[in-house]
Image (cartoon, rainbow, N blue to C red; front, side):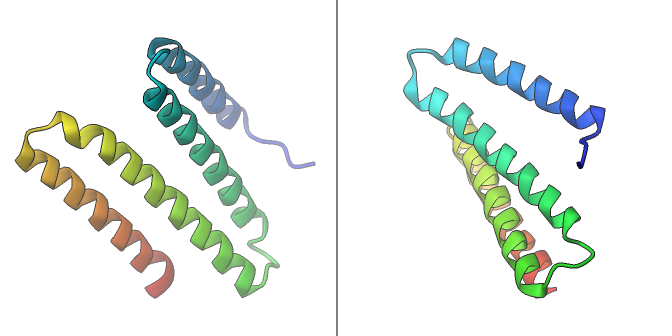
Length: 117
């Protein structure tokens, strides 16, 4: 059985505690609660995809690796855009435009790095 390192378990424990506190503080604001739960779900799925990618490193076919790469890129892009959507409204318009520009540039650069390079 594949065992996760203690640091990984500690990271998930900290994420879980932080998420519980965030949901508790956001109670009564369904959009904030949905954001926290969605970000946690995306992070958990991203971790599972990365574990599968490392596990299949030795013998997986090219198609399986491409599917996992696509899932990793989609999840990281989702997280980037989710956080940009929360940060940008708090900023002045010029800085908000810069936040969105960096988020889109990051998604495009990730696609280039994963699939075109």
